[in-house]
Length: 434
Ligand code: UGA
Image (cartoon, helix red, strand yellow):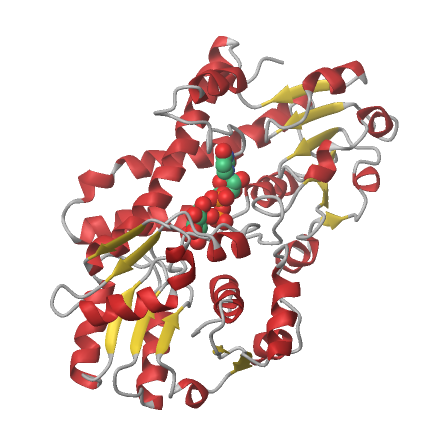
């Protein structure tokens, strides 16, 4: 497993759980040491127990030397492809250096390199061409990953579907190895799509683009609801009974963040432009714009309710992770809003059950409190921006007794407005009448 970040660490543990002998490889020695000692360096329910169990079994080890994986039968590429600092495109340097490392170590004849990272269409063909000249005895497969943070173990062991990208010529060998690796989920009836490389690569970006579009669609409806005094949560519920639409990913609020959806829709547009088909996915620019407008709307609403000026106002922000059950703060809407209000002169205090260490490292200028009541002390406005169960369970009457003004903005539409209003709160939410 080359790369032991979110995807690689989870995949290494789960493959070992399926009975394979696995080496998790990473150039980051701190990460390797942590995983080898049984500590998952990020928050993921259930993963640490499974890591320890598999370390004890002896099937799972971690290393930072490519030499330790040279004799493997299968090499999964699980490195990140983040957004480049200088453009919307994906940064391919980690993937390329993973290939450099594997090729320098010398792979054994018949081995299969399997790409899992989310990549621009055409990447697998490029890597296949490289293998054909530098290691013709090694094959390539593409096996995109669809796991969600917070459900990573479940999604890996019991995926919705499997996609195998194989070479158009002589793809049988790659398919056979992938079938062997995934025998357990396949035997359990997991649907399998076998495709060419480009299709396999595109399934992943298309899926994430569709999910992002669904969220931005409902958030666009939230904007319309705000202008018409309608309620987007009721609208979404009514839409959800149409089985062609379905109810998932119709949660209106402060929008999507994280290390995947935002960068994937941007990289997709960048790749489409390179291919001179920018128009085909130009709508993703609007999906991105709607999403970012929701963050701006929360900051604007907070300013409105605070009397038009944030200077010296105290703001409690509930949430720092980009979504609950995660400590991931990459492109987090909650932190983005917190930072904007801080920059406008507010005193912002954040509370999050898991993501505060990461948030504090990124934004030492903000304040942090472990307890929601402490974060809300003397607050002029409370913002609910990541829907942790803990925040839903807060007693609004108790919270009302510590704030300066009982005004809350529910940026995730998961608090109960009736309960909060009964406890004396002025309750604002995105896409719902006040
Ligand atoms: C996403 C995809 O869901 C996974 O299938 C994919 O494998 C992964 O990206 C990836 O590319 O690696 P993830 O980033 O873990 O997974 O998070 P999601 O659960 O998709 O949530 C993304 C964002 O959308 C979060 O900020 C969440 O709060 C937001 N969201 C989600 C909404 O605003 N409304 C919704 O109704 C659902």
